[in-house]
Image (cartoon, rainbow, N blue to C red; front, top):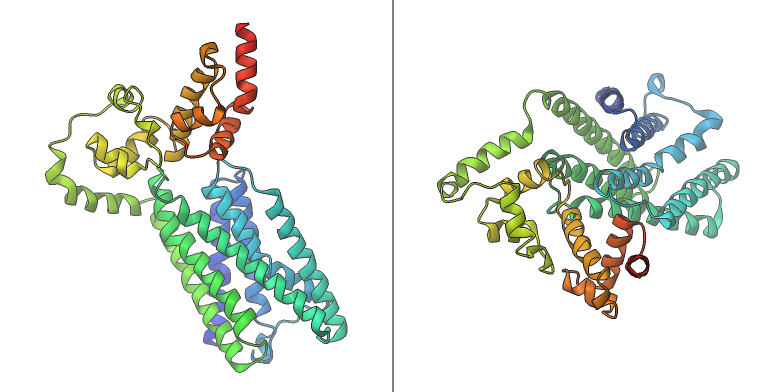
Length: 360
């Protein structure tokens, strides 16, 4: 009865979270993907109510729809990967290779489940080998999601989103990863230990979803990042009096005219030290006053702007593009080309040809 109650609590909490997210921003791609994840999680929880360990009057029977329910559950990892990419890699396009891999995994899972249903689970070694590869793909998807979540944390200038990375996405990713690992690689389906893992999973999802729901309800009244900021302000209060007033003009003098952006591997922590500012103040300034959501995105803007000046200079027409990239702060040609193409819609060489052609 306790397990059944936890399943109901988890299902309702997940659905309410999805409704709240979609209501807040229905047109956002991340909101729609989160809605799909919520639906898949609900079906995963419901599929756990079909086993023989569930009391007869609580059991569900999906019948011929079981493969479809199963494939939605196995789609959670790929959808979670897409969700994290949309939230934390917003300036980039989702890699086509990953999209193809995700679609391949989903359709292959569906095919295997249909075959398993018709052969009563006697698919042979080839069947088991394909299933193993698909399980590895799911782990890879979650691993990528966690990597994207954590790798951009230091450069993220949106304070609530920085908190969101650690307290929500990180926990979600860890839970999905360990559930996949335990269910697919450690315990056999139907074993008593597997049943125990499923029960722990249900309790974990219920606690996580309910906690997220309560936190999201409180965010309208008390922002977690604001509370953290108050603590930080108290800790840094003794040194703040030594910092001079800071504005956009002062930043441009120090950062642009001082060419600080040229420093290879520059981080916001290093820049804050150079400017004599607390890091949290610099984050807030760049986000709120300059309008950047990511520190690296700001660096690209300043570096590409100077690169355009160099590439447009007829006197420097023979200067190699690699030299231009290194002179404005990049450590190699690839990130320079990617950033330039993202901002200008063309490669540095194409830009130079166009700019010098107009001069001629």
